[in-house]
Length: 247
Picture 1 (cartoon, rainbow, N blue to C red):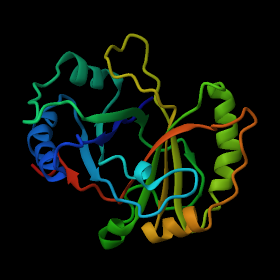
Picture 2 (cartoon, helix red, strand yellow):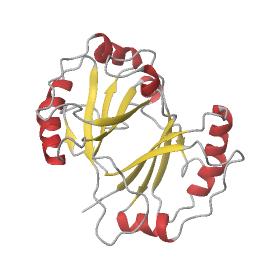
Picture 3 (cartoon, rainbow, N blue to C red):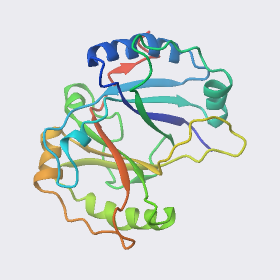
């Protein structure tokens, strides 16, 4: 039984719009309308942290492509459908229009399915200045067309994560499998992602030490590269906005 359904968004604002203007519209106009969604239990958002260096398998630009991560929580799929499909609020377009906005989304259930570092602090446990410094490295993951989801899961959970959990400075390492949409639930927001994974470090310097300067050896999957396709972003621990609390 689902205790909480979390609707997670990675968001990027249009390149032709000043970030300050986009943030002002998003945190003001858009959030004020979205928080009227029926059945909404929690609505929080994080501004992305920015990396200065990158491991060899990616680039700084790719690491820093996303601007924000937002979560909306509902009791279950039926509550989400009632709010986001059947009774959608009227959303005001930004003054510069919708073109140029990008988003990726995944539905997960509260409580990670996999905890790769037993005894590590749960999400939200690091508060105050330490929570502001903490670097959450979030991945949306999708296994490629060169394999099946079952084979991808076997390699990811059995090999890749078992190597990654030894990264220097890693404070938390958890993963959620996407919540499957039940039969009969309608809506036009399909997710193309299989997993959301989080690796947390004390700060961006600790991430740089563990993920870049001392990157572990990675065993390639038996079905060939890529092991998975991904989108990634960094945030701190505590959300910048809690839209239902900060009314």
